Image 1 (cartoon, rainbow, N blue to C red):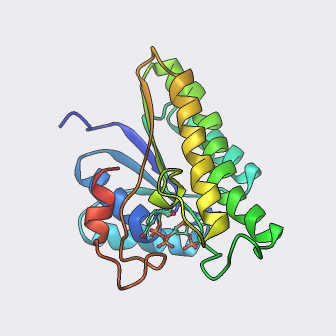
Image 2 (tube, rainbow, N blue to C red; image 1 turned 45 degrees about the vertical axis):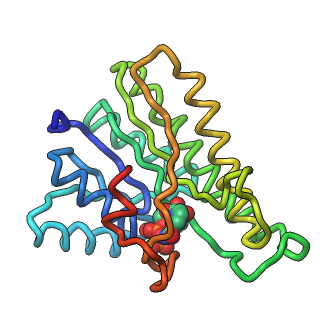
Length: 211
Ligand code: NAP
């Protein structure tokens, strides 16, 4: 399908939708770097995929830590000198039980650091490599919960963070117009993961296939 040999990095690749994106990209012949903030969990995910016959590499990456992003960029620059596909999947949803009236700013701040600053810093780190090659595909995993036309109450920090992530996507998509770089965001639907819960209507396979 023309993907062989392309390099992809996936954030939050140790479980859920991120792990499944690593699996599906790996099966397409993409050279996948599975990243995770917890080294043990990331390596375990890599080993589990290896047992299924899907070979991926692992590198530690905490998207809430700009220094960790800098180290990952340096690694990619030295090891490969290129990056074709970036999937900003890592995310937190920690205010399910809160309203906009009562949510504390520390919760909003933690959510935004991971769900917005993380993807923005990742794009800033890797767009120069993509521009150098005039090729790049960035997929930001957003949510309907961030859609302004679908906006409702509850999950205030999570909703705001995904709206802001959509804005990051639109700004960068605009700024890369006329190049062979595409910046998109997508909603995976309501998916059965630790975040989505067991009642969710979609499997991880369905949640990951668009990315
Ligand atoms: P999940 O099972 O909770 O997985 C979240 C992943 O993000 C985990 O690997 C987690 O790592 C990682 N992560 C969190 N903070 C991180 C950080 N600072 N640095 C690096 N990794 C970090 O959730 P999921 O359902 O697969 O969600 C994946 C994405 O889809 C998220 O962006 C979410 O908002 C979006 N989404 C999900 C649904 C759904 O129904 N599930 C719906 C719409 C959108 P740890 O294991 O170390 O915590």
